[in-house]
Image (cartoon, rainbow, N blue to C red; front, side, top):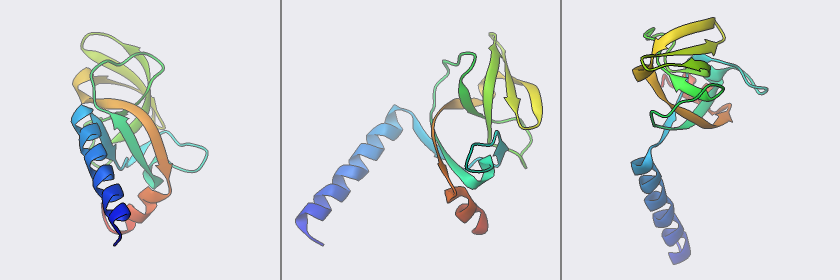
Length: 119
């Protein structure tokens, strides 16, 4: 391995650690809204872990159904204790503490590979 490759690898690891410390998270959703390239379960979701949620935002949430969590959803309404979300199953009201964070991007097809190995 050349020195430039090692530097690039070290830089990438340090950058990812800093982003993780700032709240960047990665997860494999088991259900939720589909995108143009397939269902949520076939993708990897990258999101910011924070509590500032607003209506219209795409989020990663837990619905207290372990076989379906985490879920990709859209926020319809926010109040102090609950969030109204829309998923592929319809509308739900969940506690605001179940919102993991705001969706940044989705990597399609990678989740299918993780599904094969059981993650």
